[in-house]
Image 1 (cartoon, one colour):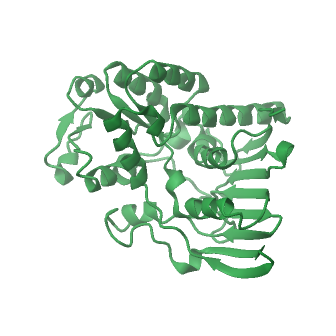
Image 2 (cartoon, rainbow, N blue to C red):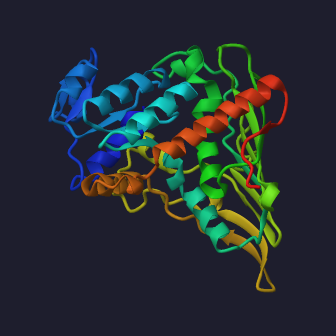
Length: 350
């Protein structure tokens, strides 16, 4: 699903920047049905011996470390799907390897280009709500009877997959770090709330505390027992006002369910019913109403990556390896907080 929805559509849409030439399929050859020009390889070694410049790793996380390491050592630029790795130590080693490599490594934290996130980022930069005091971000859903079958069963069956914490927590933590930087403390609950049909967690609640320097309390949550429409995607309070945002970013369902191309004018455009709701005072005047959602577009990740590769400038990569590493560190601290039932000190600006 990751390759079909989050990567191939953008590589093919950006045909001036990228040529999609190879895919690794160990047994099947069904990729040729849609992309007859492809060269099919059946092993990583075969792929890494080819003349491709960029390798995209879309496997389950337990394989990320080995494949990214082999690709970098083979002299390839690498995009790694999130979560970066299954374990923090693996991510730390890959970052060190990338630092000493002439090739670019980046992690696909695509949710930085969600329309709703782009909109609230702009609202914060414009000081629309004043100083932010509370920031609530949730990716809740209603999946009470998760069936552990099919190509995504690893998320439930494989302990290294990390459950909801690694799957959805990677997105929420990356967005929070992008907006606010490193928190002072972390407190987390990581639970199994559904019927025990899997070995992995299916709920987490993480609080990142930025109040040391008048920053916000950031609450991140993902659960599988929340009915649709009862959990806002974002809820933000500031000294001048508040906003809420319901509904998920439209890009994934547009590609997955409608077969829409990123080149379609309607791609990334959200319906007015899901726009932000704002109640705030700006320059002494009260505004209460909707704010149009910025057009989301994951293409920006690949456009920026193309520029970084062609200019050989690691500072221009869309997501720097150290940023992805920081996400892994926060998730690891969250696990420690839950295990030890305490608030974990993370970073001090004093």
